[in-house]
Image: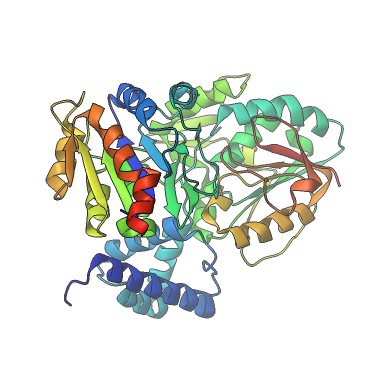
Amino acid sequence: MGYEIVVIGASYGGLSALQAMLPELAPEFPLPVVIAQHRKRDGDDGLCEFLRRRSRLPLTEPNDKDAVEGGRIYLAPRDYHLLIERSIFALSTESPVGFARPSIDVLFESAAEAYQKRAIGVILTGANRDGARGLAKIKSFGGLTIVEDPQSAESRSMPDAAIASTTVDRILPLKEIAPFLNELCHPSQRLLHAR
Amino acid sequence: MSALPQAEQNELEDIEIALLLEGLYRYYGFDFREYSPASLKRRILERMRAEKLRTVSSFQEMVLHDSACMERLLLGLSVHVTSMFRDPEFYLTFRRKVVPILKTYPTVRIWHAGCSTGEEVYSMAILLQEEGLYRKSLIYATDISHEVLRKAREGIFPLSTMQEYTSNYMKAGGTREFSDYYTAHYDNVIFHPSLKTNVVFAEHNLATDGSFNEFHVILCRNVMIYFNKALQERVHNLIYDSLSMFGVFGLGNKESLKFTPREPFYEQLDERDKLYRKVR
């Protein structure tokens, strides 16, 4: 065990995937969960409010240099890249990467460097290939890689690209991802392993 | 060179980047040592690959021995993509809550700190014209990069961005046709020169330079996100020292004065948009 962060990437179909998955994360889930969901650039899309109402963990869009805290869900704000530096968030308005800002790759690559083998990366549904490079980077640092089963994904392009990019540790149907994370990261599990 | 395990390679890269930044500072005087490391590293590696180099050490050699290469790096490190009327609600709030204050002043001095290629400067110039404030205003637009300022001064932007900017302009409370402000020329548009008659473009480095005037408004939006907390603190002090009493300070939507040492010296003008007023 010894994982310290979960990063999740989602694009097309991500709204319903997150809506299904987030409520299943246990209220005592100990790690920070950071989500990059592709979203439109202009206007408030209400995504944060929508997901907050459905999550049992507190969910916010981080401000620049906010601390990364366990037991909370963070959503990348629209029109910014979200990066993680050792236990703080950093935002950037650099060019979109692969037409996306927030970019899943940017989030995942920064999480890989900051948390190395203590990072868990999860790729959900999406109609492009963002996140594939980032997930491979998490894997190269010895982190844990999870991809939504392309069969169950609303759009399978992103899961397919992620699976092609590295040796993925787990390919799970959407409804099994949160229970798997709950089990893996349960506080009692942590204690057991710490002994 | 044999492939190192990822964690070791990462550590080595971090050391090489620290050395590059130290060299860049000691030789050329540009101080990126207190920039936010994650995005800075991305941009350095991007530049390194564009120069077709494989290690940061070889990049360092080239940067230190070839000033043209240094200029390209500087540009790569300092161009931050921005847009006209980015976050239109911010400009709408500015019209509603700041303009009435400025109307009571005989002259208005505004500082765009970190103006990049000038999109937000032209946005502000348009807003001030529409509010009848432009003629008594003076805008100082500063950035660290000579090249970026040259672009800002030109006021030439791609035609392809105008659709988005027009929509932003309208949401920002624009009172005219956005196309009144520019002339299209092939794939570009050039903004009307009257928008820059009261703008001074100048080099200024927030990391190393000091205060140079007293301002009624300072906008520094999405600039400090590239700095680490120590440098952010320095810039917050610099901005505080450069604001007149009751002067207005605008930050980006995801930036906050919270937890900075200057927080108690401001009151928030607007709950949602990051506009503050210096009150002590």
